[in-house]
Length: 258
Image (cartoon, rainbow, N blue to C red):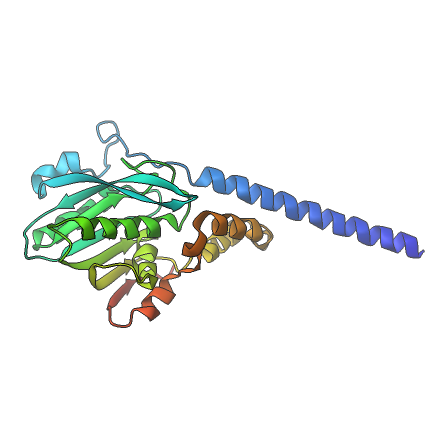
């Protein structure tokens, strides 16, 4: 009788172990496919896509620049940035776009800020548009923003300017989480966060719960381990911790209820 009970318990444990391992393996595979590239859409064959080429007559002429972004498994990507230089006396708004978005996705903001006299620096995040590599994960935009500010600090025309960080979605997370870092030499005067998330791990859990319910928690360990390995120290930074750490920098948070 006891052997029968022990056998049943062992079978139940084995069953849940197999389910657990399969879900985690599936989570890892899904992660790998989820964060591939998001190339720029060809506006000539895709009606309605907002792009600089079609609207450049209404915008300040921009300069395309390249800078390195890295530290993901010691691999450095080449990020394509776009500089709208209005005048030497104005602050610069650094615009960080969302997951699967190219810089031109926020082109109306480029136009607005330049029209009221701000310089603007935008860029295609790693794995999007004219930048190299794959998107890697929801933390990658933080790394890209860090290196965008390194670039600004290395540019003689930009390095002494006041900076406003303006981010949407993944870019909003990056703009707030960047305030955790101590090695940024530019003068960040304000941050605007639109529809951002606090951290990548809980974003995965929330998205998973909407699809597969409580099973998303079973796949959480593989996501945690993979992102921790991929992003190292960046994994610890959240938007809220950045806001709380930088008490002298005003942050405007714009968030919808749903």
